[in-house]
Image (cartoon, rainbow, N blue to C red):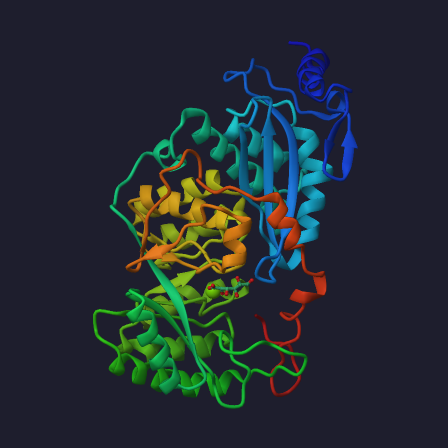
Length: 442
Ligand code: GCO
Ligand code: MG
């Protein structure tokens, strides 16, 4: 097929829907017939992408980025999570200026090919900005795939392998005693898995206090303090309740191994990010010297980074931020590899993953034999207004939505009542310093 002709045909189709040959993607205008990627096959579904919009909203003071794909079928649209809250406006620019022109006019059924084309079109692949933008498109197409067939997306991914998704929530304490109170509060709410973070005297501790300009972090104090603190909590909490802990890469690698050894008898469900992405070479050494279950990977931005960690069984749980690797399609491959090598998934699910992203995580959890645990965030009423259908937990588990697609809607009026926060609102990861003034990696 003649490339230019096919571009023109498909472009013209999409353009006709707008009536003037020009398609608007929020802030930008472009002519799809000169920019769209052609495909050497005819559309299978007959349903085309007609409009792409990238929405940033901050109902909880954190910028959530969501891509909305409209189609030439009245009322048929999809939503995908593209949240990288530290660089939200950069993601929107990529969607508006680069990805929207490439996908308008494409058949909505070409989910895998569209994602691959977007990844390769920039020549340099990956990175959290590009991947988050691609994830927004990818998840929105999976949402549309479900809606077209009138089925929840998770049914298209292979169907249930479990009756519900057990979740963990966060408990933070200003002291070990306060942390025990918090964990009990979580138990009373029905949770059975709790991530435990506790303030270290003299340090502004990850998970327990807002980082400010004067934030200091003393890794050696943390190393000395945390094993006894977590042991104390362990003894005060019923044994059926699983405790987790996030180191957030705040130790030198040799100290991380010492910490893991000292936590050996606490019986944690997993210890997260004991090593920074720069220090993964230490995992082999950690494996030989401790048997504490290791969770890692929320900072990874490519499925390929996981391959040696999985095939060499260097970690126990994958903590991938699904939008940072490009969406549901790559995450499906990753969960399949995890299943083959006996590693479990624990997709990253803090408040800086939108309700749409959480629903995508739940879709993966309910269909994956490799599922381990789901990180749950209890969204506020303001977030529920923006995203009707947001999944809530009950009795420590989340049920997947039975609505077609991912099951999450967006109320655009509510979104505009909760506009983005300024970029500086998230400028704190470069401000945490050690007692000698040097920077501490987040
Ligand atoms: C977690 C995380 C988050 C991150 C945050 C960064 O395990 O939930 O570490 O709390 O710090 O997502 O933006
Ligand atoms: Mg973490």
